[in-house]
Length: 333
Ligand SMILES: [Zn+2]
Image (cartoon, rainbow, N blue to C red; front, side, top):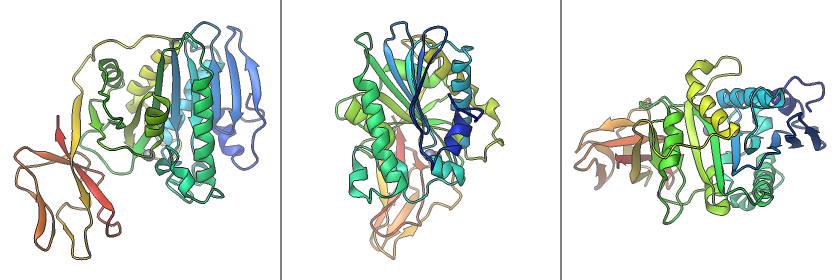
């Protein structure tokens, strides 16, 4: 399937610029494997499946631990050491950024989905790729057998910044929906005990599958950015096992095995002028707790202080232009 290249990862890195002719293979169990494109591989079991599963990584090219996990899962499926019980679409999102060990080449790809790529120059690699990935995912769901009644998408990431909560999920906003217990159970199984509920529609990959494809989906932050080969994959066994169980066809439990804390955004921090002052230190970890009354930002007479309950910061970044988001304040739900 991968020609002279050892595995899905090496093949993806090697074919980023040359392009890939689609290829097809049938495993001994009857499982059909289709390589659609560079970094896009589909597994279709012969037995009737009830779930369409999209597992993506490398939407940010330097977030290597999830890429290595996907590489190993694909290897075990092709070697038939892991049973294919559900249909799966595996995606390595940004092969060009992977090759140069950067987050992205021209544009942050995780802001281009849900059709937002249409607002950018379609000659840019990431813009073209986001459009293609949306099409591959849409086709994958559209071609589901009638036995399928569940669509899941897990978009795997690692963060640059450290976190008080090592792993967390971001659940995209879709009006009127709530986080189902079995998805909390998946998070708990994956050793993810924190979930951030978004309150606005976004243009991330997981927002696309939630909003446009009616999938249960998450952006999963699983640890910290490291170069290829330097990840301690022992810190990722939770997500690895949880994904392998799903792929093998094990149903999700109705109840999480342990507590998953839900957070929601209570304040979006925006840089309001050149006089705007920020009182969070540059090295603050995600989910750092601030006590009631703590001053977070000030701009002349305007300021923001933590309310009556503790609040938590995520994604602090004051070095953005006026009018842009400099972080989010959260409350435990
Ligand atoms: Zn990322």
